[in-house]
Length: 135
Image (cartoon, rainbow, N blue to C red):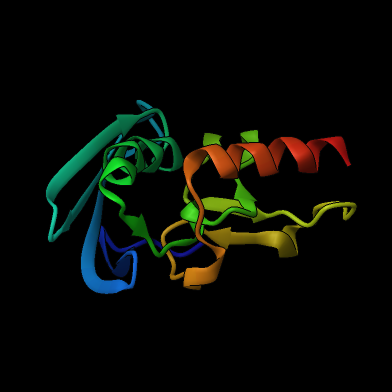
C-alpha cells in the first residue's frame, strides 16, 4: 500500500442533507496509538485507539447520535478489518459478502469514499460482521 495522505475530504450525510467534511489521522504502527478527527458542520470530533479503524469507530460514536454518517468504506455496513488489517494500522477493511471466502481482492481502503446507500450505524455494521462470520 502506498503512503496515505494525512487527511481525506469526504462526504457526510444527515437525513437528506449531504455536506463536505474532512477526516484526519495521525499515529503509527510502532506504538499502536492512532487518532482520527472529523471536521464538519458538527464542529470537530476526535477518537483515539490502537488502529485507525477503531479510532474511526470512536468518532462515529459521537456523530451517530447527531444523525451524521461519514461516507467512507470504514462506515459501510458490509466492511470490517481482519486482525492483520488492524495490526497494520487499520487502513484497510474487508468487503464482506455472505457465503464467500475472503481474498486479498476484498480489501479496500478504510478512508476512501463509499456510496451513501452502503453506510450504516456501528451496531448494524457489527451485526453484519457477526452474521458474515456465521455463514
